Amino acid sequence: MLSEVGDTRIFGLEVIHETTEKIKVIKDKLKIAQSRQKSYADIRRRHLEFEEGDHRIGTSTYRIALPPNLSSLYNVFHVSQLKKYIPNPHQILSHESVQLKSNITYDPMPIQIIDRSVKALRSK
Image 1 (cartoon, rainbow, N blue to C red):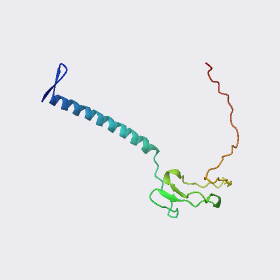
Image 2: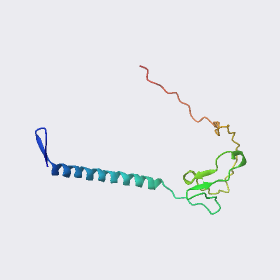
Image 3: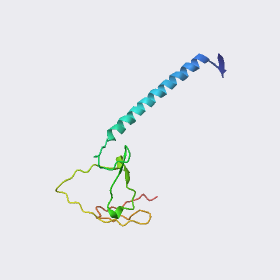
């Protein structure tokens, strides 16, 4: 098959070969990007497995027993949102009550102001 584009002649087999080569290059670049993304995700992925009595709902969700003041919250969480608690006998845990609004939000209160700065903007 022979076709003309302007003054140049392009043979059908050459077009097919050139397109095939470009597709191979694109596939190779996609494989490189996918492997880079996979290695990045594998570093940060952590496999968490909790004890038998931990109220597992599915392979990656758990039902958590919440204190009474948080009973209005949904108590099923994804594993990625949980951290395993390692008890420390020297650490004293204090529970603070949280006042929830009707839309299940709260206003966090600042504990301490650590730093102050004045931002100077360019004036034109």
